[in-house]
Image (cartoon, rainbow, N blue to C red; front, side, top):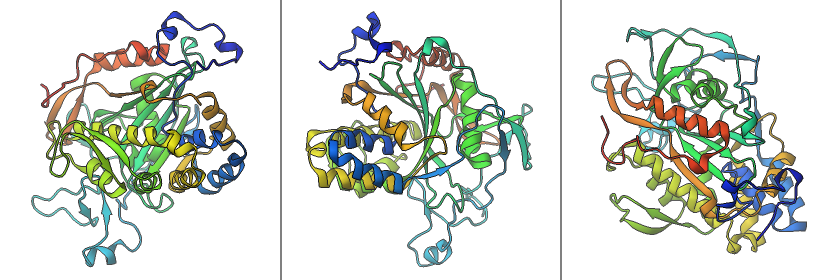
Length: 409
Protein backbone atom coordinates (compact mmCIF):
# COMPACT_ATOMS: atom_id res chain seq x y z
CA UNK A 1 0.00 0.00 0.00
CA UNK A 2 1.55 3.34 -1.03
CA UNK A 3 2.32 5.80 1.73
CA UNK A 4 2.77 9.54 1.32
CA UNK A 5 6.02 10.34 3.11
CA UNK A 6 5.52 14.08 3.34
CA UNK A 7 5.55 15.32 6.97
CA UNK A 8 2.07 16.83 7.00
CA UNK A 9 0.57 13.47 6.18
CA UNK A 10 2.60 11.35 8.55
CA UNK A 11 -0.28 10.90 10.96
CA UNK A 12 -3.52 10.02 9.24
CA UNK A 13 -6.76 10.67 11.06
CA UNK A 14 -9.13 7.77 11.88
CA UNK A 15 -11.59 9.09 9.32
CA UNK A 16 -8.90 8.94 6.64
CA UNK A 17 -7.88 5.42 7.74
CA UNK A 18 -11.36 4.18 6.97
CA UNK A 19 -10.85 4.88 3.28
CA UNK A 20 -10.02 1.92 1.14
CA UNK A 21 -7.10 3.49 -0.72
CA UNK A 22 -4.78 6.15 0.82
CA UNK A 23 -3.10 8.81 -1.29
CA UNK A 24 -5.35 8.37 -4.34
CA UNK A 25 -7.23 11.03 -6.27
CA UNK A 26 -7.38 12.88 -9.56
CA UNK A 27 -7.56 16.35 -10.99
CA UNK A 28 -10.47 16.31 -13.43
CA UNK A 29 -8.92 19.17 -15.35
CA UNK A 30 -7.94 17.22 -18.43
CA UNK A 31 -4.52 18.86 -18.46
CA UNK A 32 -3.74 17.73 -14.92
CA UNK A 33 -5.25 14.34 -15.64
CA UNK A 34 -2.85 13.99 -18.55
CA UNK A 35 0.09 14.92 -16.34
CA UNK A 36 -0.70 12.07 -13.96
CA UNK A 37 0.09 9.83 -16.89
CA UNK A 38 3.16 11.85 -17.77
CA UNK A 39 4.70 11.04 -14.40
CA UNK A 40 4.17 7.33 -14.88
CA UNK A 41 6.67 7.18 -17.74
CA UNK A 42 9.71 8.74 -16.13
CA UNK A 43 12.07 9.90 -18.89
CA UNK A 44 9.17 10.30 -21.30
CA UNK A 45 7.78 13.03 -19.05
CA UNK A 46 9.95 15.82 -20.43
CA UNK A 47 8.57 15.40 -23.93
CA UNK A 48 4.98 15.28 -22.68
CA UNK A 49 5.46 18.28 -20.40
CA UNK A 50 6.64 20.29 -23.39
CA UNK A 51 3.50 19.17 -25.24
CA UNK A 52 1.30 20.38 -22.39
CA UNK A 53 3.15 23.68 -22.08
CA UNK A 54 2.85 24.29 -25.79
CA UNK A 55 -0.84 23.43 -26.00
CA UNK A 56 -2.57 25.09 -23.04
CA UNK A 57 -3.75 28.69 -23.12
CA UNK A 58 -3.76 31.04 -20.14
CA UNK A 59 -6.30 33.74 -19.40
CA UNK A 60 -7.31 35.87 -16.40
CA UNK A 61 -10.07 33.48 -15.36
CA UNK A 62 -10.01 33.76 -11.59
CA UNK A 63 -11.18 36.67 -9.45
CA UNK A 64 -8.66 37.16 -6.68
CA UNK A 65 -9.48 39.13 -3.55
CA UNK A 66 -9.67 42.91 -4.23
CA UNK A 67 -9.32 42.46 -7.99
CA UNK A 68 -11.82 44.18 -10.30
CA UNK A 69 -14.53 42.11 -11.96
CA UNK A 70 -16.17 43.53 -15.08
CA UNK A 71 -19.81 42.82 -15.87
CA UNK A 72 -20.13 42.94 -19.64
CA UNK A 73 -22.78 40.73 -21.25
CA UNK A 74 -21.48 38.74 -24.20
CA UNK A 75 -23.66 40.29 -26.89
CA UNK A 76 -22.23 38.04 -29.58
CA UNK A 77 -23.98 34.94 -28.25
CA UNK A 78 -22.31 31.81 -29.51
CA UNK A 79 -21.79 32.75 -33.14
CA UNK A 80 -18.22 32.24 -34.33
CA UNK A 81 -16.56 33.79 -37.39
CA UNK A 82 -17.69 31.84 -40.42
CA UNK A 83 -20.74 30.35 -38.72
CA UNK A 84 -23.14 32.39 -40.83
CA UNK A 85 -21.91 30.74 -44.01
CA UNK A 86 -21.77 27.31 -42.43
CA UNK A 87 -25.28 27.61 -41.04
CA UNK A 88 -26.62 28.67 -44.40
CA UNK A 89 -25.30 25.39 -45.80
CA UNK A 90 -27.06 23.48 -43.05
CA UNK A 91 -23.82 22.22 -41.57
CA UNK A 92 -22.33 24.33 -38.83
CA UNK A 93 -23.32 26.98 -36.38
CA UNK A 94 -22.76 26.73 -32.68
CA UNK A 95 -23.96 23.40 -31.35
CA UNK A 96 -24.87 23.21 -27.69
CA UNK A 97 -25.12 20.00 -25.69
CA UNK A 98 -28.68 19.51 -26.89
CA UNK A 99 -27.42 19.30 -30.46
CA UNK A 100 -29.44 22.38 -31.45
CA UNK A 101 -27.97 24.58 -34.17
CA UNK A 102 -28.22 28.21 -33.25
CA UNK A 103 -27.53 31.16 -35.48
CA UNK A 104 -27.77 34.04 -33.04
CA UNK A 105 -30.90 35.27 -34.79
CA UNK A 106 -33.97 36.98 -33.40
CA UNK A 107 -36.80 35.78 -31.21
CA UNK A 108 -39.56 34.69 -33.53
CA UNK A 109 -42.96 33.79 -32.15
CA UNK A 110 -42.62 30.72 -29.96
CA UNK A 111 -38.84 30.66 -30.48
CA UNK A 112 -36.42 30.89 -27.56
CA UNK A 113 -33.22 32.82 -28.21
CA UNK A 114 -30.79 30.44 -26.52
CA UNK A 115 -27.85 32.67 -27.48
CA UNK A 116 -29.05 35.44 -25.18
CA UNK A 117 -27.95 35.48 -21.57
CA UNK A 118 -30.67 34.46 -19.11
CA UNK A 119 -32.37 37.56 -17.64
CA UNK A 120 -31.41 38.88 -14.22
CA UNK A 121 -34.41 39.03 -11.90
CA UNK A 122 -34.78 41.48 -9.00
CA UNK A 123 -36.38 40.80 -5.62
CA UNK A 124 -39.67 42.13 -7.01
CA UNK A 125 -39.66 39.43 -9.67
CA UNK A 126 -39.07 41.89 -12.51
CA UNK A 127 -36.19 41.79 -14.95
CA UNK A 128 -33.20 44.00 -14.20
CA UNK A 129 -31.31 45.68 -17.02
CA UNK A 130 -27.62 45.04 -16.37
CA UNK A 131 -25.31 47.70 -17.83
CA UNK A 132 -21.57 47.28 -18.15
CA UNK A 133 -20.08 47.88 -14.72
CA UNK A 134 -17.34 46.86 -12.33
CA UNK A 135 -17.10 45.69 -8.72
CA UNK A 136 -14.35 44.58 -6.36
CA UNK A 137 -13.97 40.83 -5.87
CA UNK A 138 -14.00 39.22 -2.45
CA UNK A 139 -12.77 35.75 -1.52
CA UNK A 140 -13.85 33.64 1.47
CA UNK A 141 -11.05 32.86 3.93
CA UNK A 142 -9.55 29.38 3.76
CA UNK A 143 -10.74 27.54 6.88
CA UNK A 144 -7.95 26.11 9.02
CA UNK A 145 -9.88 22.82 9.16
CA UNK A 146 -9.45 22.41 5.40
CA UNK A 147 -5.67 22.22 5.65
CA UNK A 148 -4.28 22.34 2.12
CA UNK A 149 -7.44 21.12 0.41
CA UNK A 150 -7.88 22.72 -3.01
CA UNK A 151 -10.89 23.77 -5.08
CA UNK A 152 -10.90 23.99 -8.87
CA UNK A 153 -13.73 25.37 -10.98
CA UNK A 154 -14.08 23.36 -14.19
CA UNK A 155 -16.10 25.04 -16.95
CA UNK A 156 -17.22 23.27 -20.11
CA UNK A 157 -17.69 25.93 -22.77
CA UNK A 158 -19.27 25.63 -26.20
CA UNK A 159 -16.99 28.40 -27.55
CA UNK A 160 -14.52 27.36 -30.22
CA UNK A 161 -12.39 30.46 -29.65
CA UNK A 162 -12.42 32.20 -26.26
CA UNK A 163 -10.52 35.14 -27.74
CA UNK A 164 -13.58 35.87 -29.91
CA UNK A 165 -16.39 35.21 -27.44
CA UNK A 166 -16.87 33.33 -24.21
CA UNK A 167 -19.84 31.21 -25.34
CA UNK A 168 -22.02 29.40 -22.82
CA UNK A 169 -20.98 27.44 -19.74
CA UNK A 170 -22.96 24.27 -20.34
CA UNK A 171 -21.06 22.37 -17.64
CA UNK A 172 -20.05 23.80 -14.25
CA UNK A 173 -18.17 21.48 -11.89
CA UNK A 174 -16.48 22.24 -8.58
CA UNK A 175 -13.56 19.88 -8.02
CA UNK A 176 -12.55 19.51 -4.36
CA UNK A 177 -9.17 17.83 -3.74
CA UNK A 178 -8.72 16.63 -0.18
CA UNK A 179 -5.92 17.87 2.06
CA UNK A 180 -4.32 14.43 2.03
CA UNK A 181 -4.60 14.19 -1.77
CA UNK A 182 -6.41 10.86 -1.43
CA UNK A 183 -9.90 11.87 -2.54
CA UNK A 184 -11.52 13.99 -5.26
CA UNK A 185 -15.12 15.18 -5.19
CA UNK A 186 -16.71 16.53 -8.36
CA UNK A 187 -19.81 18.60 -7.61
CA UNK A 188 -21.94 19.33 -10.67
CA UNK A 189 -23.87 22.60 -10.58
CA UNK A 190 -26.84 22.42 -12.99
CA UNK A 191 -26.62 25.28 -15.45
CA UNK A 192 -30.23 26.32 -14.66
CA UNK A 193 -29.68 26.48 -10.88
CA UNK A 194 -31.35 29.74 -9.79
CA UNK A 195 -28.90 31.72 -7.65
CA UNK A 196 -27.91 35.33 -6.80
CA UNK A 197 -25.58 36.67 -9.52
CA UNK A 198 -22.70 38.63 -7.99
CA UNK A 199 -22.55 42.35 -8.67
CA UNK A 200 -25.98 42.59 -10.33
CA UNK A 201 -28.36 42.92 -7.40
CA UNK A 202 -30.50 40.11 -8.79
CA UNK A 203 -30.71 36.38 -9.44
CA UNK A 204 -30.70 34.14 -12.50
CA UNK A 205 -29.59 30.77 -13.79
CA UNK A 206 -26.03 30.18 -12.63
CA UNK A 207 -24.64 29.97 -16.15
CA UNK A 208 -25.86 33.54 -16.71
CA UNK A 209 -22.93 34.62 -14.52
CA UNK A 210 -20.56 33.30 -17.18
CA UNK A 211 -22.54 35.03 -19.93
CA UNK A 212 -22.48 38.38 -18.12
CA UNK A 213 -18.91 38.37 -16.85
CA UNK A 214 -17.02 35.26 -17.88
CA UNK A 215 -15.19 32.98 -15.47
CA UNK A 216 -14.36 35.73 -12.90
CA UNK A 217 -18.06 36.55 -12.40
CA UNK A 218 -18.91 32.86 -12.20
CA UNK A 219 -16.26 32.47 -9.48
CA UNK A 220 -17.74 35.39 -7.54
CA UNK A 221 -21.22 33.92 -7.92
CA UNK A 222 -20.25 30.40 -6.85
CA UNK A 223 -17.98 31.21 -3.89
CA UNK A 224 -20.74 32.68 -1.66
CA UNK A 225 -22.78 29.48 -2.14
CA UNK A 226 -20.01 27.17 -0.96
CA UNK A 227 -18.07 29.64 1.22
CA UNK A 228 -14.64 28.29 0.25
CA UNK A 229 -12.06 29.94 -2.03
CA UNK A 230 -11.69 28.73 -5.60
CA UNK A 231 -7.96 28.22 -6.18
CA UNK A 232 -7.88 27.69 -9.94
CA UNK A 233 -10.16 27.80 -12.97
CA UNK A 234 -10.03 25.56 -16.04
CA UNK A 235 -12.10 25.90 -19.23
CA UNK A 236 -12.33 22.97 -21.61
CA UNK A 237 -13.94 22.89 -25.04
CA UNK A 238 -16.20 19.90 -25.63
CA UNK A 239 -14.39 19.01 -28.82
CA UNK A 240 -11.50 17.87 -26.64
CA UNK A 241 -13.66 15.23 -24.96
CA UNK A 242 -14.25 13.61 -28.34
CA UNK A 243 -10.55 13.76 -29.22
CA UNK A 244 -9.50 12.37 -25.81
CA UNK A 245 -11.92 9.49 -26.08
CA UNK A 246 -10.68 8.49 -29.52
CA UNK A 247 -7.03 8.88 -28.49
CA UNK A 248 -7.39 6.11 -25.90
CA UNK A 249 -9.42 3.80 -28.11
CA UNK A 250 -12.88 4.61 -26.76
CA UNK A 251 -14.28 4.11 -23.27
CA UNK A 252 -16.75 1.85 -21.47
CA UNK A 253 -19.57 3.97 -20.03
CA UNK A 254 -22.20 2.90 -17.52
CA UNK A 255 -25.58 3.90 -18.98
CA UNK A 256 -27.76 4.22 -15.88
CA UNK A 257 -30.89 5.39 -17.75
CA UNK A 258 -31.69 4.21 -21.27
CA UNK A 259 -32.59 6.47 -24.19
CA UNK A 260 -32.77 6.00 -27.95
CA UNK A 261 -29.56 4.31 -29.08
CA UNK A 262 -28.29 3.88 -25.53
CA UNK A 263 -29.60 0.76 -23.75
CA UNK A 264 -29.11 0.48 -20.00
CA UNK A 265 -25.83 -1.16 -18.99
CA UNK A 266 -22.17 -0.79 -19.90
CA UNK A 267 -21.64 0.47 -23.47
CA UNK A 268 -18.40 1.04 -25.37
CA UNK A 269 -18.35 4.52 -26.94
CA UNK A 270 -16.08 6.37 -29.31
CA UNK A 271 -15.82 10.15 -29.17
CA UNK A 272 -18.75 10.94 -31.47
CA UNK A 273 -21.03 8.47 -29.69
CA UNK A 274 -19.97 9.87 -26.33
CA UNK A 275 -20.90 13.42 -27.32
CA UNK A 276 -24.32 12.22 -28.49
CA UNK A 277 -24.72 10.42 -25.16
CA UNK A 278 -23.98 13.51 -23.02
CA UNK A 279 -26.09 15.85 -25.16
CA UNK A 280 -29.39 14.05 -24.59
CA UNK A 281 -31.76 15.36 -21.95
CA UNK A 282 -35.29 15.37 -23.39
CA UNK A 283 -35.71 11.59 -23.11
CA UNK A 284 -34.32 11.47 -19.58
CA UNK A 285 -36.43 11.37 -16.42
CA UNK A 286 -34.91 14.45 -14.78
CA UNK A 287 -33.94 16.47 -17.85
CA UNK A 288 -30.80 18.54 -17.31
CA UNK A 289 -30.15 16.89 -13.94
CA UNK A 290 -30.01 13.48 -15.62
CA UNK A 291 -27.84 14.90 -18.36
CA UNK A 292 -25.38 16.11 -15.75
CA UNK A 293 -25.23 12.59 -14.34
CA UNK A 294 -24.50 11.27 -17.83
CA UNK A 295 -21.68 13.76 -18.18
CA UNK A 296 -20.26 12.55 -14.88
CA UNK A 297 -20.44 8.92 -16.03
CA UNK A 298 -18.65 9.78 -19.28
CA UNK A 299 -15.92 11.74 -17.47
CA UNK A 300 -15.44 8.86 -15.05
CA UNK A 301 -15.04 6.45 -17.97
CA UNK A 302 -12.34 8.67 -19.52
CA UNK A 303 -10.55 8.89 -16.17
CA UNK A 304 -10.61 5.14 -15.68
CA UNK A 305 -9.26 4.39 -19.15
CA UNK A 306 -6.66 7.17 -19.11
CA UNK A 307 -5.21 5.94 -15.82
CA UNK A 308 -5.28 2.27 -16.76
CA UNK A 309 -2.14 0.24 -17.33
CA UNK A 310 -3.27 -0.14 -20.93
CA UNK A 311 -2.79 3.61 -21.45
CA UNK A 312 0.05 4.44 -19.08
CA UNK A 313 2.36 1.74 -20.50
CA UNK A 314 1.67 2.67 -24.13
CA UNK A 315 3.81 5.74 -24.98
CA UNK A 316 2.09 6.43 -28.31
CA UNK A 317 -1.40 6.20 -26.82
CA UNK A 318 -0.44 8.32 -23.81
CA UNK A 319 1.14 10.97 -26.01
CA UNK A 320 -2.00 11.12 -28.15
CA UNK A 321 -4.17 11.47 -25.07
CA UNK A 322 -2.01 14.23 -23.56
CA UNK A 323 -2.07 16.15 -26.84
CA UNK A 324 -5.85 15.79 -27.20
CA UNK A 325 -6.46 16.65 -23.54
CA UNK A 326 -4.55 19.90 -23.64
CA UNK A 327 -5.20 21.22 -27.15
CA UNK A 328 -8.50 22.88 -26.18
CA UNK A 329 -7.58 23.70 -22.59
CA UNK A 330 -7.52 27.18 -21.04
CA UNK A 331 -6.35 27.68 -17.45
CA UNK A 332 -6.07 30.68 -15.17
CA UNK A 333 -2.88 32.70 -15.43
CA UNK A 334 -1.58 31.47 -12.05
CA UNK A 335 -1.80 27.74 -12.80
CA UNK A 336 1.63 26.66 -13.99
CA UNK A 337 2.57 23.31 -15.49
CA UNK A 338 5.03 22.74 -12.66
CA UNK A 339 2.24 23.09 -10.10
CA UNK A 340 0.05 20.75 -12.15
CA UNK A 341 2.88 18.22 -12.28
CA UNK A 342 3.53 18.40 -8.53
CA UNK A 343 -0.15 18.01 -7.78
CA UNK A 344 -0.41 15.08 -10.14
CA UNK A 345 2.57 13.43 -8.44
CA UNK A 346 1.00 13.85 -4.99
CA UNK A 347 -2.10 12.13 -6.38
CA UNK A 348 -0.28 9.44 -8.33
CA UNK A 349 -2.10 6.52 -6.69
CA UNK A 350 -5.57 7.49 -7.97
CA UNK A 351 -8.18 4.80 -8.57
CA UNK A 352 -11.79 5.03 -9.63
CA UNK A 353 -13.28 4.48 -6.18
CA UNK A 354 -11.45 7.53 -4.83
CA UNK A 355 -13.34 9.82 -7.24
CA UNK A 356 -16.83 10.81 -6.08
CA UNK A 357 -19.60 12.59 -7.96
CA UNK A 358 -22.29 14.78 -6.43
CA UNK A 359 -24.91 17.17 -7.74
CA UNK A 360 -25.37 20.53 -6.04
CA UNK A 361 -28.49 20.20 -3.82
CA UNK A 362 -31.78 21.15 -5.42
CA UNK A 363 -35.42 20.80 -4.41
CA UNK A 364 -37.30 20.92 -7.70
CA UNK A 365 -37.75 22.43 -11.14
CA UNK A 366 -40.03 25.45 -11.58
CA UNK A 367 -41.31 27.63 -14.40
CA UNK A 368 -40.23 31.17 -13.51
CA UNK A 369 -42.31 33.89 -15.22
CA UNK A 370 -39.18 35.82 -16.23
CA UNK A 371 -36.25 33.39 -16.11
CA UNK A 372 -38.12 30.42 -17.61
CA UNK A 373 -37.42 26.86 -16.49
CA UNK A 374 -35.16 26.92 -13.44
CA UNK A 375 -33.66 24.45 -10.99
CA UNK A 376 -34.60 25.50 -7.44
CA UNK A 377 -31.68 25.39 -5.01
CA UNK A 378 -32.11 23.56 -1.69
CA UNK A 379 -30.73 26.33 0.53
CA UNK A 380 -30.31 24.42 3.79
CA UNK A 381 -28.68 21.44 2.09
CA UNK A 382 -26.34 23.80 0.22
CA UNK A 383 -25.20 25.01 3.64
CA UNK A 384 -24.51 21.40 4.63
CA UNK A 385 -22.41 20.93 1.48
CA UNK A 386 -20.57 24.16 2.29
CA UNK A 387 -19.70 22.95 5.79
CA UNK A 388 -18.24 19.70 4.48
CA UNK A 389 -16.16 21.57 1.91
CA UNK A 390 -14.92 23.98 4.59
CA UNK A 391 -13.97 21.14 6.93
CA UNK A 392 -12.64 18.82 4.21
CA UNK A 393 -15.03 16.09 5.33
CA UNK A 394 -16.65 15.23 2.02
CA UNK A 395 -16.33 11.53 2.85
CA UNK A 396 -19.16 12.12 5.35
CA UNK A 397 -21.38 14.20 3.04
CA UNK A 398 -24.83 12.87 2.15
CA UNK A 399 -27.73 14.55 0.36
CA UNK A 400 -31.16 13.25 1.42
CA UNK A 401 -32.92 16.30 -0.04
CA UNK A 402 -32.37 16.37 -3.82
CA UNK A 403 -35.03 14.41 -5.72
CA UNK A 404 -33.89 11.03 -6.98
CA UNK A 405 -36.69 10.81 -9.55
CA UNK A 406 -39.03 13.25 -11.21
CA UNK A 407 -38.74 16.99 -10.79
CA UNK A 408 -39.36 17.41 -7.10
CA UNK A 409 -41.67 19.91 -5.45
